[in-house]
Length: 88
Image 1 (tube, rainbow, N blue to C red):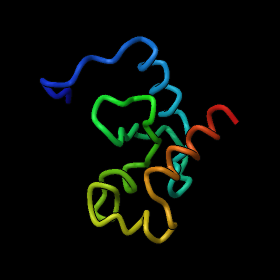
Image 2 (image 1 turned 30 degrees about the horizontal axis):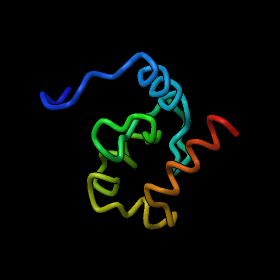
Image 3 (image 1 turned 90 degrees about the vertical axis):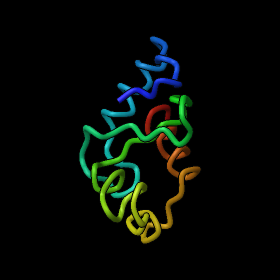
Image 4 (image 1 turned 60 degrees about the vertical axis):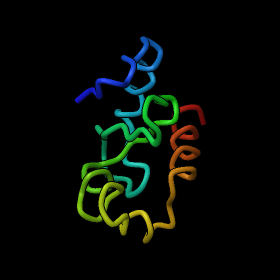
């Protein structure tokens, strides 16, 4: 669902997000397609691929973040790894 205060994605942002969603989960490696998690609203070029459990599950980013903590992962590391997976 689009926030009413959020600008619509540009064509370049949509293309990037499409590539991100094709990747495996950057936290646990679950096979894609993945959700595109945007660490800060509207900054689509730093989005990372996450499976449902690592994104919205009770132990995921929007929960306790236990899945992230056990793998010593944070958003900066996830962004870095995502970029390596796309451009590497």
